[in-house]
Amino acid sequence: MTRVPIPFTNCPGGAIIQAEVFRESGTDGKIRIYGIRFSEANRKSLQNVLQAVEKLTGHQFSENVGVRFETEYPGLAGESWELMLALGIAAELQNKPLNPKLTGTGKLDRYGYLEKVAGIPEKVQAAKQAGYSVFLVSTSQFEAVSEDGIRVVHVDTLERAWSIAKAIPTWRGYN
Image 1 (cartoon, one colour):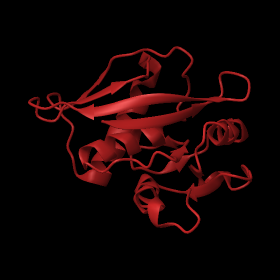
Image 2: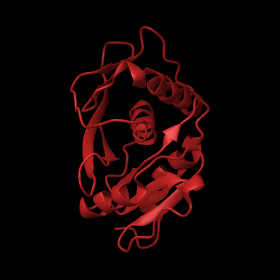
Image 3: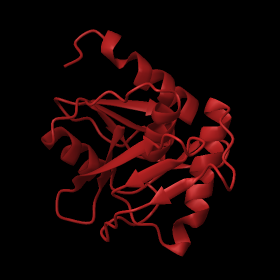
Image 4: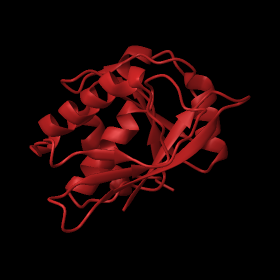
């Protein structure tokens, strides 16, 4: 199971939702996700996430190997959850845990490129208050934030975010 911290701003100061991704045994690798509610409006976002993960990992999602969403969290809206959900799915598919000190935000296109999202300062602050030490954000938001106690890392693709996520334990000064 992979825990996926998803920052959001639908409350004062922001907060972190803990979603969980796991691969079911005996079901051709079906992925299950707990902690997120998806509306019909977010189905395109989910397709972007799955296509970007396919590109990153080579894993092909089909009708038999898909994603099920179990628990609803009504406060989650928008598309900023896409980066972290994609990293969580990739981690689960490749059997490589996400570093528990990593979180971030970003909308993905189907090719794995990150786009701008709103509420970066609040999300970084919420991540810092929750004990995270690394926060990933789109390079297109270079002006976003500088916050003591958390390292804000700018990435332009899911592939780059994945390589950083795998390298974090080797960073000097990593907490």
